[in-house]
Image 1: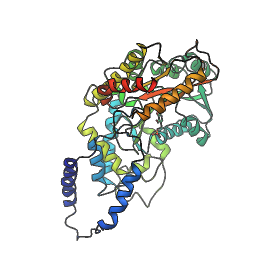
Image 2 (image 1 turned 180 degrees about the horizontal axis):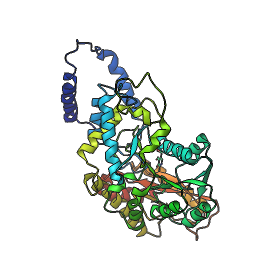
Image 3 (image 1 turned 120 degrees about the horizontal axis):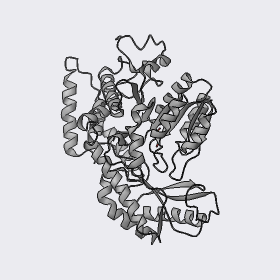
Image 4 (image 1 turned 90 degrees about the horizontal axis):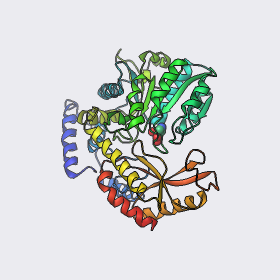
Length: 444
Ligand SMILES: Cc1ncc(COP(=O)(O)O)c(C=O)c1O
């Protein structure tokens, strides 16, 4: 999982090859004073031990997925150059790799044309999409589900676009009837559909939202920061499969390679279906774009400096694991999907002890221990979370609101704390019996 000695040897070989490309230059390498570096680096290693073991399959808490070993190596290799993908002047090769990698993502979405680039993460990707949405529909509202990522509301605040949250159904998906009632008011410019909500992994019914949006002349942006790579899965069920199949018809989509794309952090992506939205990015920067008349990525992105290394790592990963439906990457996602379904089945087989709160649509599972009331269950969820961590099983806690779920529960408080697990590593499938064993022990 980490870079092994063999991996470091490979990196050395690749660095040598890269360095040879500059061998005509007089030597100008800074000398490493290892005696000074060593204690600091070891201190860093010591400090970094204060972390949850994100790399291990017993870490099944938040949305954290270890980068692919090739992504780590390619990122490290690119540091020799440390390119800046703002302009071709700062990162010629890595800009070309970014354009190719993003074009492959656009193909994965089913688009023949696109405009897109990498961002620092999903938040920036969504911000660009909502900024363009506001440019195209000035003064009109943006709607997203009450379960959408919290940053949508904040982004709309920053952009000063009116924002409203839509109610959700018992599966935590946008309630299409409520959506239509809002659209009929005539003041909506854009609907955000989330394919994989952060809290419970719900997939909004995009296949139903799109025809409605078309009828009312409204834009559709998809937040697929977490779920986007499930386009490659062959294992999705029912409505989730239909929603993902509808992706080619949307206007823009945010996806995070630093989640399911196995990239180091700092790698989000925004893609627009209509390349002409590039006109809104137009700006004058005569001091950065002087080496070429070709497109500089800074001309189509809000951020200025961006790490070219992120593009290099992504390109390398896609070279190894092409974005093909049912390919190796898709199969890995299907293993995660199966792990989530197996955990759900295990919980449902023990109704005296556990309550599965949502049937998993992707690889995220949300459940609660049984108990007499919302307050009692919340306290017990927190206790199990802590006891599991003592047993080296790391889960997460989320809050769900009273309303559409668990009507027979004694809701003595409006919110319920429950357990949540992102089974994002394919290894989670193999480790599931051990995860369940430790969960049982933590609850015992
Ligand atoms: C659905 C969704 N949207 C947006 C984001 C924000 O992405 P980032 O943390 O990369 O900025 C997340 C993060 O988990 C997410 O799950």
